[in-house]
Image (cartoon, rainbow, N blue to C red; front, top):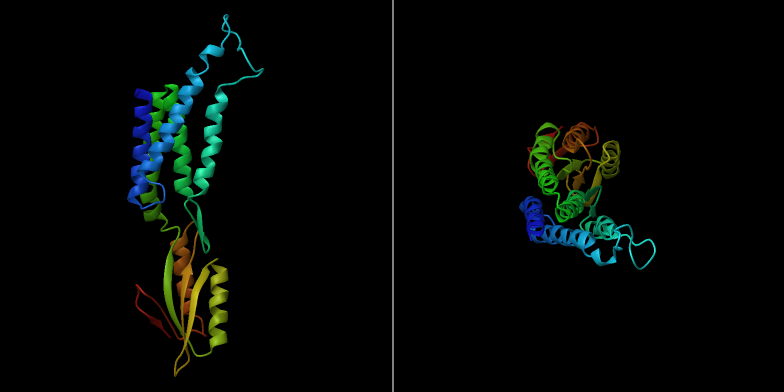
Length: 231
């Protein structure tokens, strides 16, 4: 009972952090995965006692029987569950951290089920710190790794404006989506969404904005949350 309870606590702690961020897998999912992993480990450890020979040096039944295989299958099998939380949106892949947390709580459940309470609790603490404090420090020091902004750009010549957009997006590996073109008396208005994934995404987003705003083909550029930059 204690081993399952500790597994539930570990899963709940990690799931709580994921739920606060409105991720696909929340408290209940993490508790179920961690608890099930603990149960599997308990069965692996104690469920084959009747197969051990009288001298304790072997097992009856099938040659090569290995109860530890049940626990090993948890580690690989939970990957299919984690794969369901990974989504690709433009240039950004989302859900990797949630998939990793599901795999991690499965490992915590195995540790708790085996009776390694200290290791399970320590692992829970380190994982929770990684998901909270380190994520906060990363955003403060490096910026949002997956920034998405909506832009409004004006250009006198449509072809030149689109070429400039494509050129600067390629330099910063930006995904341009939802492009809409509107004809104006003085030229064209191009509305689009720019998404830059990966490390230092915020800084690269700023470089993309500055370079595109200074391009001769662009007469005006603005984001929905920033003042316009006009030439």
